[in-house]
Length: 334
Image (cartoon, rainbow, N blue to C red; front, side, top):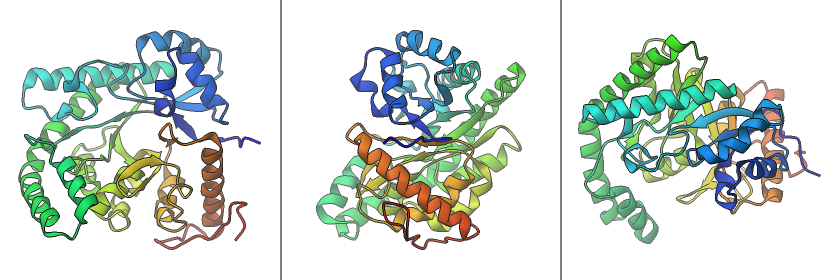
């Protein structure tokens, strides 16, 4: 029997490649027990012609949309881009325009938030891919990995302040325009999956603080956070307290090694590590599963059952988990 997923939402990234018709994609997600969806950045205008009537009829609710929305076939404004941090003013302003467009769709659909990949410290080559290859082949403590990591970190640390300023300016511009329209939409800046991309948890807190009350929060992607912790960029357990009061939403998935978008607890078989994110899940106003197509309906159901059972125990314990293990079996019983 499929579990009713209640307040939890589900990203269309799971099945968008299997469908040409938007309504078919949404119906498949509804079949998993979800009443809310996040429309990801690959959703096209054509797909929206069959999704929008479903929204209007109340057959599905939209929790969030993922910038750039709808889909635009231009890597300058794609998911792995300098985007809001462009030094080229024309490109930066275009990125702001597209973010405002995403917010317009979010407001039209009654969504609470827009998820955005705000930017990065650019490198000539994909140093993240090189590092991940070394990680897998030689390990994170190998001399080759450590040497290249230090090279990456030196450039990242020297330039992240500059790009943070560009991102802040773009977010301020976008938020001003969104507020002027009266749209009740929050911008969620997402933790990323490549080591040169922004923001880390600490960078996010700095950006949010400097924007002085603009409707910007952190979109905490747990799988990305796990990857970056393993690579050495930040420590989730140590840093998450900095952003607990500034969360716009979350992407729920876990990483197995450096492979992400797997079902929490189920694919790793680790019943302890992911527990550190439970207080964040409890606090998040928008909770979205972002899973890869390889995750089966049965695995999704089982993962959700484990996660919600652990959250019930968290509540019973008064919210005290630290980084400890909340022990439940697959029926939710200790």
